[in-house]
Length: 209
Image (cartoon, rainbow, N blue to C red; front, side, top):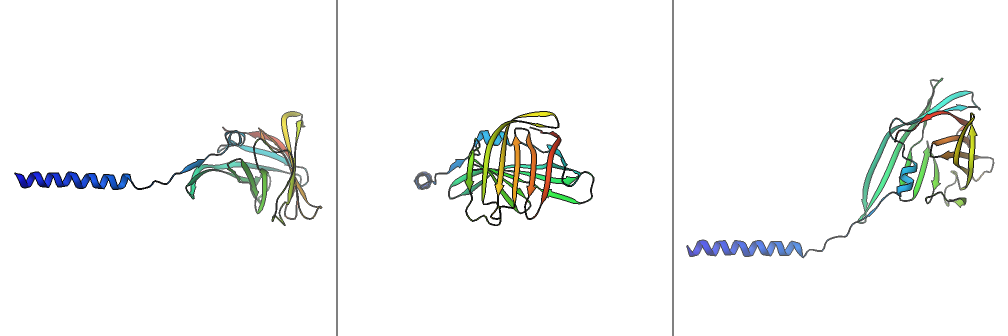
């Protein structure tokens, strides 16, 4: 009986030692950085959302639609960063030519648009920073942008409010790209760079929240 008791006591002592050992092990503090709630809501384009444009330069109808929406967290140096990736793909309605990809990535207070190989930093903070921004090391991509709140804008006799105009400039001032956007998404897109030439005016759209 004594031997059984001693074994039982030894088991308890050993278990307490193990518990104490793990409880004393320093724990790494992990912080979480979320996408700004206002920014996330502003670009809340869920799968199935679409925009149809008339390209006045090429006399065709162009469209883009959301094909996937991915909200995930990436752990880096004990910091869990939320990233939202909105997959947007473009295609022509009256042409067999493949369209362009338009993914948008949200992180913290930043929104970035990628049109094929060109990177457009839509905002370095939110709400939109109005004025001039310079981007070091971006050449031959946009090296600066100018954002302004132009208020109301009419497209096809439809009034859109709280419209922002985002103009992007390259090292060669011959090239510049301009986006007009609001809560309805892309309203006018004018691409005049070394890769693409488009003048897109919104014809119709649908945003799925």
